[in-house]
Image (cartoon, rainbow, N blue to C red):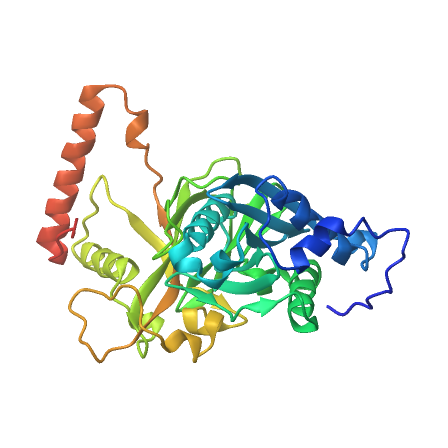
Length: 367
């Protein structure tokens, strides 16, 4: 999105004392940190039209650092303000990394369609950006706001929050929030068919506490935007797989459920308590399979992962494939069972179903 940046109107520019402190050497006091960050964003906002301006939400200062978020419409950029310049220089040993991890986890809990994020690290006379994804946090070099290079980076990051398209700042283009119906609109893939659109309420039934890793999310869904009964469940996750393996060949949960369904159909047998796969596959973005390589590019995606699957050899490289499946029925959560007989009956039905799946499909549940 292109925009002409106007020359600041002197009457609109806020007092620069706190902003100047941020751009100069020396430590911030913890009490001044929120005001300094607000002042810096205010200076950038003074160059933007009112509808394009960026809002800032600051948290409390904890361990000499303050988390914040820059917001513009649906766009969100994370941030951490460090009260000491040395903390910006060494984010891992200073604890700034822990602040970013916590901020990302909170962000992913609130924005269930997040697939990555950008973050700013600010400190006295220093700024750097970082890119947060499922297996790593990538830090840029430190830039100094005492010169034009650092000030340009800071201004560009704030302006990017205002003008970037939501997917560029991390939202999933295959999962959009519809204000008019107050539901998520989700594309559900199938390798042999066109995507089917399903609709989910705002809050998921389950979401991983940590963003890092598979980031599993389960949402009850309906097949119609006006249906008030959510009879299906969407499970969304990022699976770690060999980099040269196509999504259609994965033997993950979707592949196992497909095999179970085929075996039980052949035996003309259907357990009473059985998760029936309706459709599922790799999510497509602009008709391209969604993966960490699509998000990061081949160069960034080639680094060593934090984790590797069981049985992996040392020379195998991995990336994450975005998988999504639609299944039914939607059961009652265990915490809603208040009768011991109902709980025992549920366990007994599950055991019978697993025995039937073992008999006809030769599959034992891994967990």
